Image (tube, rainbow over all chains, first blue to last red):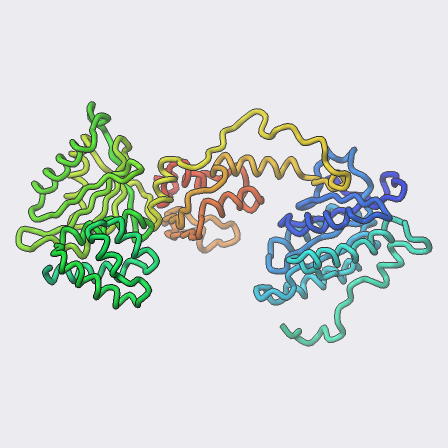
Length: 184
Length: 336
């Protein structure tokens, strides 16, 4: 099994590497185009459909600082594929180097309980859960900005902060009325 | 102009949408230019119909002319109704040299031998298709022009497309077709749908085919902008393979707009978690229907995005390869 390890390679100067994992391979392209426009830091983006990543590319692949799972809430397959990919990450990634991004959260065809299940997953893994709007360029731009903030911390480019410190602030929590049925 | 002609014309006018009315009447050419100019196409369809009926009465047009108009309309708009395909088998030695005049005479004579009082009109369309309109009557009654059957055949190909044929008249029509094209058998080709153009393009492979090549893509461009170089798809090879296999099975570019596929399954139930059903010996009979505005496009997308596993299963790849959309699947002989 080829697990992804967070600290097994040397970092590059002033570089941040992000891996976007999305089953549909749609939103990740727009996000990638916006992310590489950042000038203060050199951002390398790797796009994948699911994990595990092929062994052949392993040598040329840089150290991945942040793994983002993009989940389309209207599709069950998207969620299942992301859950199955989680197995291929070493537990060290979950200390602030993994983030979930949900799209289409307000869509009419979201199955009830899907969002709750995703929230449960993010809570159990102590990861942040972001919501993104994928249909407009402004949506991609604002999600890219938020990802860049987390990415800069995760790649160690922000002094006095580490990914673990940040994740304590940004991690997803279940709302307090967990025992009552949620409104949908 | 007798009542039948008037009735036929009124029915036909209801079928033709207002936007196509003027061009169809121009193509028809039975009304003189001044009469056509006198028709005001901005009025309601009902008013136009009444004026048209009056003009046709003046010109003393008959049922024969109205059926011409119907044929022109259907030829220009073939994607309506339900078309069924038949395939001619066992050609005789001179089947390849059957040409239009010979076919016309033979067909008309064979069909009138088989049934009296049929009205047949044959026309060759610009794209080499032979259109046949048959109005059926029997020994006692006149041909019924309200429910005419349309047949499209491309000479020297074994395919025939038929629309609106009743089961009573089916053997007669098929026999006349077989004899006049100098074949010995005809069978149903298990391909039917609403869009004639899609059926025809699928059977005659009139869409862009993808052939396996050793070097599938041209050399990559060397002048990528710096920012694009930083984005890399990690599983690009797997994704390119899927695209290639999907393209080889279904074709490239615009695909014929097939709209449905029907699978009749008579196979044994297979589910390891369901004991009660798996224990039964009889086959589980179930039918699966796929429908879409462009089925082949959706199947190709399923294969290239990984939803359907590649190489594409023969159940789906037989649709474009064999040109069918009705399958009966049993345990022993798939795609029987």
